Length: 504
Ligand code: BES
Ligand code: ZN
Ligand code: ZN
Image 1 (tube, rainbow, N blue to C red):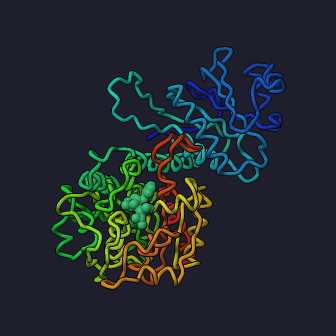
Image 2: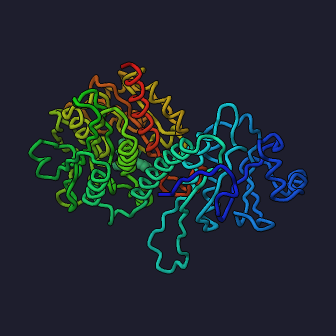
Image 3: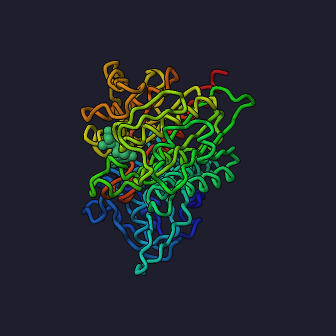
């Protein structure tokens, strides 16, 4: 993880790069005149002539023109400083992070004043810049043997501030923890499926549990058979890889009460099973454990920040393969809840493993539930690649989640789940529910199916099929896994904890 430090003046710290924001009116930034004097008296002219750009996010690089504590300056366009808000600032620093990584920079200072206004102080800048730089500088190296590019990691970000240094450092560290968790989730998704099996994911979770002192339970096939987890077992039937139900508990209060359950889809590879995916549709299905990665990332943040809220994470992990033993359309299976399921489509496997995971979470004490899954292609048709589709059975619970998403800048959008949708999920001649009522509006059927196992427990469903993977570089990172929902899940739990403490 990238180190965070602070200093009260630019010249206190030797770094490779100094970041200087250039807003529309740099002369209003406190300390700007002094900077001009030390850097070069012509700086205002260069800004006026647009040799140094003021346009939002534009980066102009210059060497230090005399012996300084920095080798180079990256001038970053801020635009209207007074109207700067959190998400654009996060994205601005992600752009800086990308550039720093490209230029193989190890040490950087960020002078906070040019990014501050009435709403945003140095602590906010430190948090947002750390998140942004941390996420923006991420890359996944892969396994290229011919690559002669040695990855040079950024080691330290120093914030130059005249405000309370301890608090600014702390805020920066919180941002780095958040970015690091996102990046870990991204890597889990980016790792190829021959390497990230359910067993490997369970090992990863075990290490996480050790690092953060979380309770962990890992159920294998035998334990699932004993409990009667017929849905996840059916999905796993065609596989040579053992399924794993990964259960992490973070206990914050004496009593195991008021527990929130985070449930993740952890399909390490989705071929579709006998309802086989076409060859082009199969590529990329290593990412079908994006929900699991989001939950693990959130647990890392929770493990660090230790909010006063009990959390259980349940991850249902398997791959979805074909063989003589695989499950097939027309099969009827009995889930952990006792509900029977008619399988109409083996490619609708996510809702099956989630059904058992949600039931397990409830039995283990969860009184609130959030499931996260790369569940349907339907959500991509409906909302594209930058909006996570959601369902809920509880408006008040959802409203609080929306506030957390607003805080992190991760866009979510609710779709309706109606009685007529439920009817179609319950329509079967041979079982209680069917796993594929149709292709029309099928994001709703995917989540709605999970809802059948949730019952009245306040619940939110997050379909991240469109947002978990990016086909090209985006504002906060490179192409590939995005680590979406890591920050919102953790922020939501932290907000619930803060709310509960206020009521005490
Ligand atoms: N893992 C897929 C959903 C998916 C699609 C994720 C594209 C990421 C990108 C899921 O298991 C699936 O195959 N869903 C089917 C459901 C259908 C059979 C009812 C789908 O979306 O087509
Ligand atoms: Zn599928
Ligand atoms: Zn799937």
